[in-house]
Length: 324
Image (cartoon, rainbow, N blue to C red; front, side, top):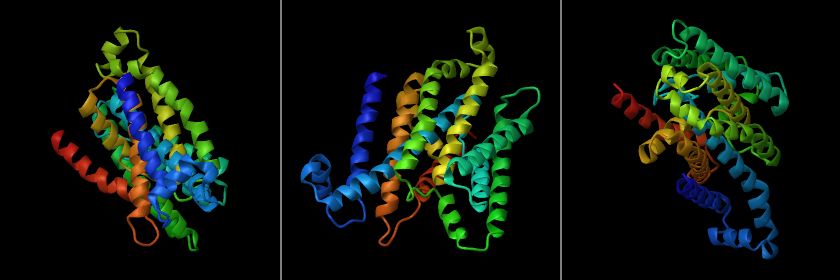
């Protein structure tokens, strides 16, 4: 576990240095490297670009990627289904509805938009659980299908809310819905870290319980796991984390599908290893996607969610075919 964690941490640091050193500014990557590692001799303009513009954005991208990757891992463990992730289950869509309502009402991103995003995400989670409830709380096929239906409904509600908006906020909302990290600043980075880092610790602490849940709830219960309590805690924590990311940068799809599945293929199904691997891997993946999103277009930039969707949708189709 230690070797895997250190390796992924090294990859993340490397990707973050790329994210800090590359961009639309025509100064050259080596100039930015010298400015990063020799701050006393650096051009003030380069220092401003690195530490005031790019650094907060890279940190937010890393936290969002880690959160969505971990969220997908948790849902896949609870539902024992490799297709489960917050975006497909509708949790992200519900959070987006709450966040859009907050934006249309003119609330500040924190606490107004964030609180409404959390309420939307939790409301969606409860709706999915209610629709899928019956004899078995975690009947995985019912939960997944319910999530897909609720997600489709959330998309329709989002389009309805946008159709009611007749001013310049439409452009901002549409860009934000596609996963926009361009507005990330120091305050957003600190707020995001304060909200999700404690959740990361709790999920890692429960990683062995997730291993036992994979064996079936009866087996997990016989081995001392409070199945209902652990399930509720993980679902609420995941919904809270996803809501925080949606309130911060909109909908970033499929990170929770691609990264856990990739690492499950490489290092196996032990969540004591998967949790840190997905945290650092998801963080590096979204930093890289955001770097591509702001360097590929010749003019301006595109939302990072466009890149993650272009990668994630084919992966989802492949998984769907493999699972029958």
